[in-house]
Amino acid sequence: MQLVIKRFGQLTAKELYQILSLRAETFIVDQQIMYNDLDNVDQVSTHVFYQDTDSVAAYLRIIDAGQSYNSPLIGRVCVSNKGAGIGSKLLHDTLDYLAQESSASKVLVESQLRAQPFYERAGFTQVSSKVLDHFGVLHHVLSFDLDAYRQTRNTISIDDIHVSIRPLETADLRTLQKLSVETFVDTFIDSNTADDLASCIDSLYNTEKLTRELAAKHSYFYFVEVEGQVAGYLKLNTRYEQTEGQRDDSLEIERLYILPRYKG
View 1 (cartoon, helix red, strand yellow):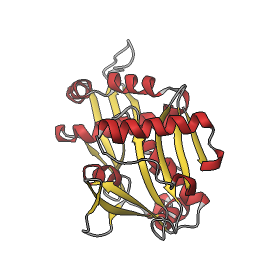
View 2 (cartoon, rainbow, N blue to C red):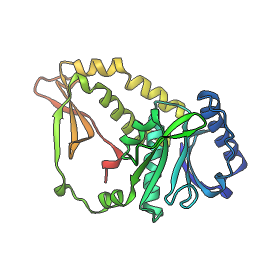
View 3 (tube, rainbow, N blue to C red):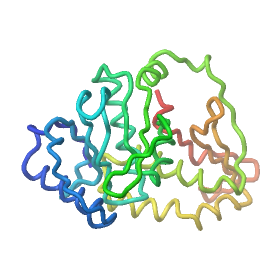
């Protein structure tokens, strides 16, 4: 898949058709929201999406500052393969783009209440308790601090932060699963289709498989935490679990996964 960032006038007819098709499938068909998706805002937006072989795999638009709010506004966030981590990757790429290419101090999103945890995991915070009603669907306004994001990426060194490692517990399974998916997608999205990614994730990181791995006698999982926040994980094996030798005195690193926002 390829990341594409274009203004409305730069979109090809095929790209626009695929974008509108995904938006209609997501919001009108799946979520059954009865509204006119063509709101004359696309013309004043930047369109960010992952182009798959014959379709758009994930999409969002950034409405220009001064249109809906004084700050840019992310909207129409949708993915074709839900649960495969592509949406998180697209949001992270969008924040990177805004931090590098815009002068905005923050970016907003009007999040459906059920989707709010998705944005909060990416660093968005709720602006107020006010609830917006868009076509019968309740939303909160969330904000992401781009200035703080730029500063973190550009000025903080490893000597300025607290890094710790702790062993995983059974209760950490869901967090382990999310980390595995997000880091896997970040690494392999450029060389795979959305269907291939979804298939690999389902095979490698399903709940049953990860539960077995956590219980394995010769495997050990550790979370890497930065300032108290989980930033990645490490999987160690004894007895050469990945090879035929399986010596008792061996220790191998099978996985070292770091979330994209902590790299660099």
